[in-house]
Image (cartoon, rainbow, N blue to C red; front, side, top):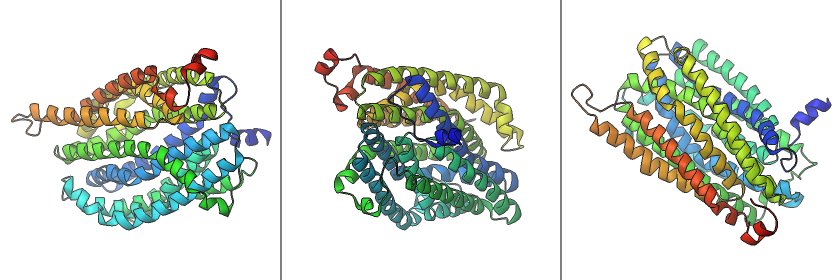
Length: 470
């Protein structure tokens, strides 16, 4: 019983060995992210096996658009995690309670707006992206169900951000695993037995994520030893809402950039035909797992830096950044080796079409070195966000995505056009991403070493001289 209680208890990252604390916090979150990625993967496997390659392409084409709809909640989640981690580290119960209440209210208002607006935007976006006529109706049906049921993924994103800010990554893991099992079962039942196609996959995802959101809300309501979860705090002063939004907006903008770039590149991907679209879906599903350590360690670094800033233990920030980044890169290196060896088997999970398997593996191998260097970007950006500097990572994302990745992809495709390749070399999609990741890691490292984030955290030169070398 004491062991279980300890597992579900928040982690105080202001004490103990930084590397060990970061790993202890990251592992449940990484497993949870893997479980969340299973949503998309199981969707793809089931529709590919039971409906066909066109349905697989439809689910893949719809993904970037739905991610664009969710960026607001992802941004709020980041802002919530930063504010909560800093107040938790400072042991300020009242401000912590008010900030959590503000998160719940902001999410409710945002969900209402999303459910009203998105149904009118889906088909025009699909048409704008040159979505093939053979899959556009399936894409629309899939996205409509997900957008109308967005209350689940929205609240789970926000409440998970709050739990992470409190140092509790284990509870979110357990709830996500439960909902993942439900999602897998419902996917199979709705598609294989009821023949609902991509609509059944979307419905299963909505139901599963609503369950995970309810479980997260229940957990927060039981944490009275840390903060007060009362009705009056749902309508906290504008100060807390403004603080969460101001910190979350740059992260939301970053996600918008990622989503828009994915949509723009999806338009280029669509020009290469349905076979390449389907192979791209398979690559992105495996990519979704391979890149999870970067996002998990990055989120852990945000909580770590936020808690230590709140506790004014600034000497631990740089130490944790160094240790966390090295551990993250080693973790990704192991995953890269695994994918290189078993890549063909991973691709064959999605389809029996040998041509798709070979093409998917070939494209996936292009990305492998990028997974290791991407850890640098995410970990050091996580430190910046944790101390309140969410703007610098945003600008780095703008540079690497808009100025580097998208132009390279389109120029590469244009310059490689030929009679055999009328639309250019389709590998441009993946080489452009690899180049962007490498440039992003270099820029992030240089900016981190320049120390702009220290000023954002209020770490003055006088303080450094008198106390520590942060």
